Amino acid sequence: MKSFAVADDQFPKSNDKKVVDCSKSNAFPLFNTIFFAFFFSVISYLFVTFRQKIHTATPLYLTLSEMAAVVCFVASFVYFLGFFGMNFLQSMPFPDEEEDDELEETNAKEIIHSTNSAGCVTKISDQDFLTPLPKSTTAVELLTATTEDEEVIQAVVTGQTPSYSLESKLGDCKRAAFIRRQALERITGRSLEGLPLDGFNYESILGQCCEMPVGYVQIPVGIAGPLLLDGMEFSVPMATTEGCLVASTNRGCKAINASGGATSILLKDGMTRAPVVRFATAKRAAELKFFLEEPLNFQTLASVFNKSSRFGRLQTIRCAMAGKNLYMRFTCSTGDAMGMNMVSKGVQNVLDYLQSDFPDMDIIGISGNYCSDKKPAAVNWIEGRGKSVVCEAIIKEEVVKKVLKTDVASLVELNMLKNLTGSAMAGALGGFNAHASNIVSAVYLATGQDPAQNVESSHCITMMEAVNGGKDLHVSVTMPSIEVGTVGGGTQLASQSACLNLLGVKGANKVSPGSNARQLAKVVAGSVLAGELSLMSAIAAGQLVKSHMKYNRSNK
Ligand code: ADP
Image 1 (cartoon, helix red, strand yellow):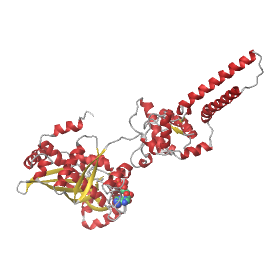
Image 2 (image 1 turned 180 degrees about the horizontal axis):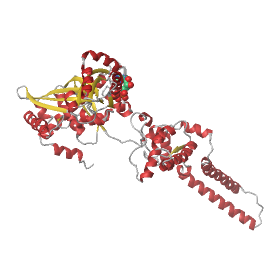
Image 3 (image 1 turned 180 degrees about the vertical axis):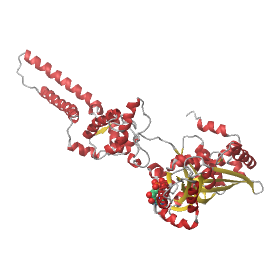
Image 4 (image 1 turned 120 degrees about the horizontal axis):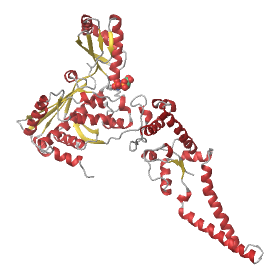
């Protein structure tokens, strides 16, 4: 007997989460009809014959045909007893070892077959298809869980159980998410239908990526490329819902490839954190500034800082004062990690150390915004943060014409008036480009980067110049603050990790720590170069609106 939990298209409701027997009456409608006909015909036949015998006082011996009718009656009776009786028995709340064993062996795929043939379930989620039922999950347990779920949901709704404590209380992250969303729907009176719950490993985000989950948002991933960068080909994953973006970046990659590829140079690699401390006087604050900037003190400070990690290595400390307040911008290398945690730990070590020499130092905050994280700030644009990369290519005249459908002179003029002069007129801060943030965000989402760091990571100046006697186009992007990592944060999640794997930069680089993250930063810059080329060409050729109408407003 195959039993299974009903799945309601990626969104099982607790009330629906009950055991449903793949009822034989549904499974074999033809058989049932035949047996029903049999059953009632033999009963009526026997009834009529015996009635007649009693009326005519004939002895009640069975004739051959009556014996056959009795056999048929018994057979159809046993059939119906087995059929409906088992359903009834199965709904009784006691365990059945044989059934458990069978359930353990039953994978979701088999269930779908029997389900479909039975017509019991019309919608089945991918997860149900892919994932076998857990070994320990029996029909009875699922039933019990439903009742238990209901109690916990009520406790959350009434405020008896805090929603945030569900994971630790239940010890089952998926169930916690399921219960939280049920409670949320009841509290708000609003449905979350459409936000999937199944198909995600909630254990993988616990204590690392997201608190109090109720599901996950799906973002399609498109592939641009291959991008020929430094002699290697990269297929660039982009998670976006903006039509045209992947297609456009892909066209840029095509133009770069057809011209021999792009080249990238990494100028700097260092993550920053800048605490703010206060003194009673500006004089005392300045004394600490001089102490920190004295080259003779650097080794001591570096060894204190570096204790926090195998990978964090102090590079510089740059100070800025505001009255009696001091901002100390620590920069350190962080291996393959984006590095915010690493640099913060190192800075804390140094602050603890400084406290003994400067006991009057009042630590106001480990971050004083001179870092500067996730905010537009000139310090990042000028000094850099994370990886500073320049990427360039020379696009041949015929490629500009054939692939980009424009000409070199138009591109150079547009770049000067839009990306340089136009941005200057707008008072831009690091925004001397057409749409670097489009590509940065899409690659960041696909590869598990912190999407909020798109703010400074998208700082970019795009330059275009006619070269080779005015025939070809030299194009470059300079991006001083690309903040990426291939370990930590969202990079370890299954989907994001798959995208990093596609780029060949998944996880920590064992041979040369930091190489994977640096390579990823170069790919980001190369992709931005492709995106800039294509969008600028579309604008120069007056095609922007037309292509957006084609890709963003599809009737389909
Ligand atoms: P972040 O500092 O970017 O927030 P995490 O602190 O979350 O990153 O992750 C970095 C962790 O990964 C550290 O504990 C570090 O020791 C470990 N790690 C392992 N290999 C590497 C590597 N090659 N580069 C950087 N960190 C690494």
